[in-house]
Length: 72
Image (cartoon, rainbow, N blue to C red; front, top):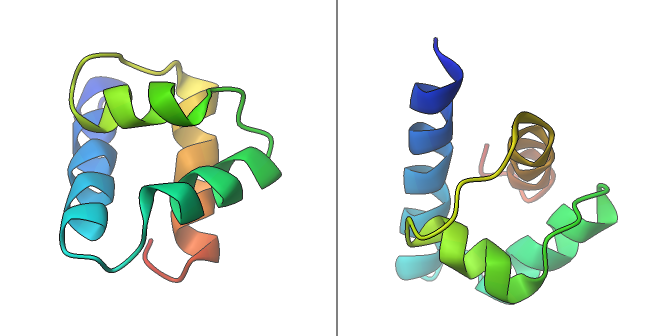
């Protein structure tokens, strides 16, 4: 799967999880940060809303955060 498509899938999964109150943005960000993510919470929010696009490493870290939260 191309990286851009994986990014869109990850973005959608994160956005749905937050919107449906499965997780909070803060919980997602804390787990993302604990796994080595570098973005601020506001930047993560901007990514989930399609304003920013993370690089491949940040996308991988976000995936690990979802897995750690048992959503990925």
